[in-house]
Length: 330
Image (tube, rainbow, N blue to C red):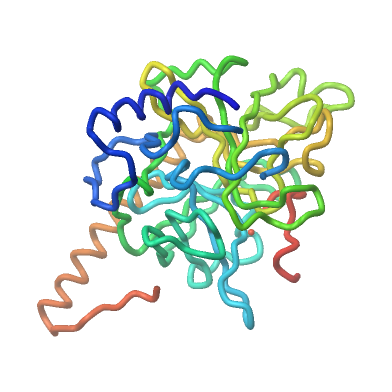
């Protein structure tokens, strides 16, 4: 069991407001980020070595699902909602399918086999992959999904804060950091239908690059998280998902890492490797700005079409290993 001070602050606010259950009442699109309104004050840390997350515990967690002929949509990767139109994930998730038509983003999901009443599905308008992504080294393993329609926030659906420069995040061994996802609960096991969560330590790069560890594979755009003894780790199906840390001064969570790759799952001295989000501030901000401009242009265009011809628009409603591509046939 681990106490979450970030969560504790939010629970106090919830109790003062007289609330005890999640609300589907929409929140403003200018709602603050990184809040876990529904989390318990005390919670425990599958991911590998984790456990079931509480319903609504990680409201920015999304399931990226790709269409497979004869099967339908199937979970492939995780992602993080960063604003009402945008989701950050790993570039290697779309290595085999970059056409947005075949993807959908599912938000507010807890049990992947049974959507809740607050679960929403969104079509993808565009996928932007970092132009210098290299699958051989997982360098620049970052991508942005742009949605057709804006996401309405509520207690179950919230954006995560980005680690931009005006907030100093002192990440050390005392910082509470967490991973979440629907990936495998053992190295060669099946994915979990229930969202899993686990607390992890940030491993200093000099240690993670050491002998019998990754031996120099981890560069400045990456970092390691897990434990020397192994046991708790992200795994296949968790790729693209969030590693978030609690910032006690603001009682908010920030997206520090994106699940990228690793050798196996939960092995000693081979923790998960994550995209260091703070190194991509400019790339993210530039793409979010472009997404915002494109969305405004699309909205104006559709409005003009509707006013002119009375046309009604109906929108139609890949993983780690090395956190692998086993879900899709080559």
